[in-house]
Length: 71
Picture 1: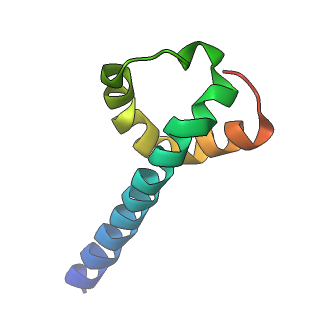
Picture 2: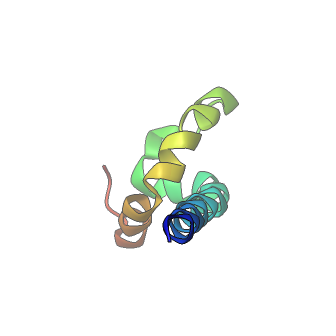
């Protein structure tokens, strides 16, 4: 029983993270510019820095990109 619960939990977390990773690439190309215009000349280092946060917070960022509201 506990193995089944743990497996389901790991699959859910893995799916969430996978969606976050998939979301990151279009977000870094276009979406982030809708939220913050100052990112236009950002370095690759900055893009790597926001990678974990984008993956963790992708539902909130997706909502902001759809609304087009700045942070």
